[in-house]
Image 1 (cartoon, one colour):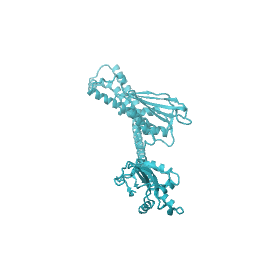
Image 2 (image 1 turned 180 degrees about the vertical axis):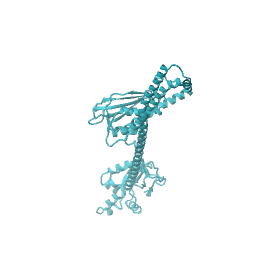
Image 3 (image 1 turned 60 degrees about the vertical axis):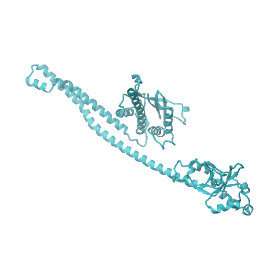
Amino acid sequence: MSIPYLWENQTGGDLGLESTLEDLPLYDFQVVLGCSVRDLVQHFERHPLLPGVIIVDPKENGTSEFLGMISRRGLLEFFLRPKGLELFLDQSLDVVYSYIRTPVLVLPAQTSILTATQQSLKRSAPGYADPIVVQGNWLASADYPWMVPYRLLNSHELNLAYWQIRGIETQVRYERTQVQLLQSEKMASLGRLVDGVAHEILDPVGFIWGNLTHLITYSDSLIELLDAYATNYPQPVVAIEALKEEIEFDFLRQDFPRLLSSIKSGTERLSKLATSLQNFCHIDEVHPKPADLHSHLDSILLLMKSRINRDIKIIKNYGHLPPVTCYIGQLNQAFINILIHGFDSLLNQAIKQDWVDEYGNTQRIEPSELPQIIITTGMINLDSSSTDRVNTPERWVSICIADNSPGLSAEEQQKILDSFSSPKRPQKETSLSLSYHIVTAKHGGQLKLRSQPGIGTEFEILLPFI
């Protein structure tokens, strides 16, 4: 019979979601099957917190076999029977064990506390409160070479640890929610600020644009008047000729229309940019509203021109799309996340090619292989059998964003797909996982990823058209 010993976590670390049974206090108390019941009872009296005892059967070769476990509660209930103490106190343990043998829950030491608690709660009466036997890689001591690598875990300790972890999890979830709410409020405030700035830009731009047409008309009329004077009064005047030479009249006459055309082009571009900012900073309301997806895609591409510092060709294969009922502000975020992923892939490819051109002997890519992003939209029909949904809409809006980057490897694709799953998304939320959540959870749609190494990558957004 060994001496009862309590093994506690020596690291002193706090419990977390990944904590295992090894991190909990474990009791090491083992007896051979032929020991005296009286000696066992005396050990229980000296150690009131001891939850039970592990029963082993020593072999002739010096090893032992794990037989089971007797809990303190089970032994006490056995002795409370009529004349139980008188009949069995002086017997060997094998006699008592033959009467009170109960099913034992044995779990590896690497089992997480959350999983162990779930399995412990599945036990039926009367053994639902018995200690749990934990199997590990512990070695037998020199004094007790027959001991087996098993220890006891008090069910009460397991339940306390479980609720402690649940409390930590609830606190972390609450803090994460608060951070998300704060971030959402910041983004909403930033959206309102940018929307106000865009509105302030549009006011003077509209004033310039409205008067620019009249300015062009006036300038044409003045030049026409000067031409009429030159035709009807061909005799040059010395003072006028000197002034014309001083102001470089011939150049001014040719450049002035081009100057007005340049002002008109810049004003038009600034107006489109401010309108794109307003569209992108659209604040969603409680209910979804119809939106023109093509105009919003164009606005996003216009805003992202500064990011495209390489020769990336944008090909738009827009089909006929009616107004789509959606949360357009959130959908804009999904579009821009996917486009940024494509731009980054193409830019990385271009940087690698520049490096090869400078330090390697590989031939540069041909013009037909220049980086490009293809945006294809349209209405499609899906078989209800092809989607794991009930009462699926017959018509769907499809937005495909494809690039001719080197593509994703199988491991990279699996990482992206793993980030889409609900259990793993909170651990490391990426821009693509956020886009997946927007498309699926917020709009009831689908986000599909298709990629082939050496060919390219395609993301397809499917939105139900109701």
